[in-house]
Image 1 (cartoon, rainbow, N blue to C red):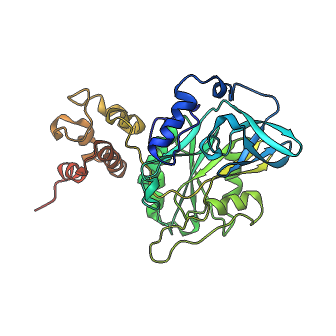
Image 2 (cartoon, rainbow, N blue to C red):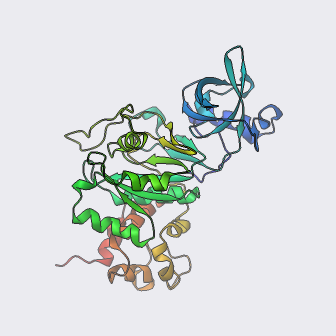
Amino acid sequence: MPHYNAYDSFKTKKSIEKKQRAKEKAFGKKNDEVDDFITNKCDNYGIIIEVRYDDAYVLLDDEVILAKLRKDINLVCNQVIFPGDKVVVLGENGNYTITNLIKRTSLLSRTKKDRTRKDDLGLTKSFAANVDLAVIVVAAKEPPLHPKFIDRYLMILQNSNIPAIICLNKCDLKTLEEDEILSIYRDLNIPVVETSTYNNIGIDELKTYLLNKQAIFVGNSGVGKSSLTNAIMGDDEIKTSHVGEKSKRGRHTTTTSKYYVWNDNSSIIDTPGIRSLDISSFSPIEIQDYFPELDNWREKCKYNDCLHFHEPYDSCIVKQGVASGLINRDRFESYLRIMSDVLDEKNYDDVLDEIFPKKK
């Protein structure tokens, strides 16, 4: 996952080479025709609610219109704008053109690491802009709660300066195990809301966090993002699906990010389910910055650049803190998994064996 430039519009590509050239043409080199596409502000603007290949639905003056990019941009619509973007629209004879993009406050992207489409493997896909709050939606069961996925999302969101909360959906199915996992994040002062769309639990509490914000729901397929959106919107028109019986993994029902207004100045961007997140472009030394529970320990390590990975146990105070139970083992294992991805080494189990030697 790259470091996010909130004002870089062209992150996706049909092929790495072709879209890299498009990006350089649009932003990497001086191009007066394209430079004026981004504007600092405009009093009358529309909000992108859904993007298609070469056009987009725009909420403008309480009406939904279909608009195309101005022709000199010379890129298709879904390479340039995303749900949540604020745009200037010109209408003439019933046809609408997106003439300008208002400078963003944030842009969320991910690098495709799953192999559902081989041609897209390794490509960076942007899916939402101008997000005020991210809701990491997980489920108590079906699919099971994976805290390591939460940790990766927290890294991505913190890197983009987007506040986050965790929503445990299907909370009526939770056990003591899920409670223990969530307590880790509560101890880190990350708000946790428990909901059940089936039993109408926690929806009002979730709304209090979403009020007056442009929020986004992110998480695995099947956790109930669209069902939560339905509950907040008060209707059932958003398509939902069940978890696969064999794999216990969600089916991708939402295929593109979509924008919904549920109250004055309050909106939700519902995103496709994501099964894997790539954070491999983070530098190894900065990864620990996203694990605040290590802060008071890492300064005491023998080496200033200690990664708490290959370094000997005797010189790493963080490893000793994990062994003593003062640093949560699951969070540290998540840290090791992320570090192994960044270092392109799959031997994080060796580190755990060093900390917790197996009894003979």
